[in-house]
Image 1: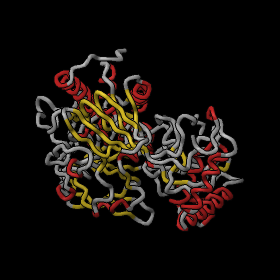
Image 2: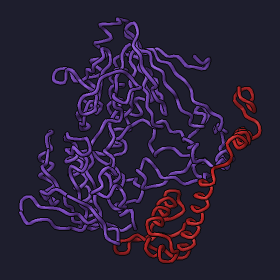
Image 3: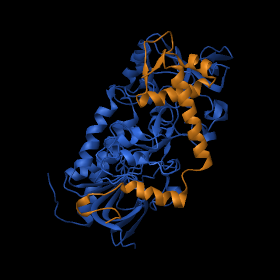
Image 4: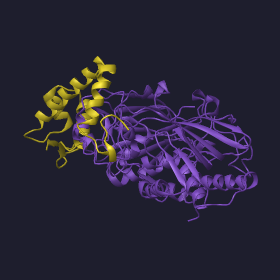
Length: 101
Length: 440
């Protein structure tokens, strides 16, 4: 039986968070490259979500407003759409406008 | 041997849980044979679960595969190991001894309820391999909607150890200290259903080495056509535009000695025609062109399927595509020479291009490791009795199913799996007679 585990499978405290302390001590919490990628990802998410907070916009429109490459904007829109933070609006020409949920 | 090594005895060890491995396992288990099924990915289902529809019937691929996946997962005679690799199989005294490494999910499966709260809480976004990089997943995620088993996998390489998942998990099933586990299987026979991979999209410099965002692999297009695809429709990865002109480049990874793939991959013509027909349905005003050398529609109903595509308005151009480049708007430009018009080289611009990549073995015997069976000249498993006993390999008691022996379509892979299961049963009856058990 693992540390923190009681009879019958009940666990007291937060078992995984206790483990995390051990893993962080040996492995560190991410490489500088991973941390930078995560920081950049959050920055792009915030820029995109701010751009579509009040009005639905297409990928080229978001790209023009934020200065981010269209391909990056679309990938993040896809990601945010999958996790229910962005919704599709009625298609405009060849493009779908997206709005923050 | 480590004290924690799990030991199992089975009639048959099946390596690979794509459609052929699933079918062979079910056929054996339904005959009362005990089966250990090993899959290296976190879910069973192989490539077929990744497809939108199948040719020539246009049936939903997921609707055919998911019930088989569920039957395997719940069968009393099948022990399933996902996220597991067979390190080696040795034959001794008429039996096969396999060592398997079960990689950690960092999830305790007996506690996880598949609620996805960990996935929602995770802040690390990664490219989703199920959507071939077009979509996103989190560092802890269930591989796809109908994955079996329905447990998430934590990507330890990319996890930032923030603990967000652990904080929201209602059953405390996340285990950051989980280690790989060793399993030893003693089996009477082996079926290799190791499957295929597509030829790499970056293999040909003249097609842009995979560097053009609007030049896709056929499996990427399958995901765009799937009802739960990454974009919610067919769009260009570069900017989200709905394409009005789509081209297929046939033989982009087969019949090409420069790639070491001189053979025909047999399914590319049909999957391109299928996708073209599906695109005609979802984008009715789009122009769809297939650039081909010759169309090989060999199976039952395939020629009619091809003729239907022509009748629907899909344009077939007999031409070899010499080069692909792109303009500043990421529109692919194809340099072609029409073989029937005799008009010389020309350049044609499309919104989106799909390369009909070929099939190469996912595991080559020449790589070594798994088991000492021989490879054929094409790199796939050698089948010494291809005409009369296609399931045989060069080792007695080891059988092959599906695309492990060469390119084939789903129908042939399933038929092949049945043949491999029957051959394994006959072999067991000959070498280790024992009463059948667990008959349903």
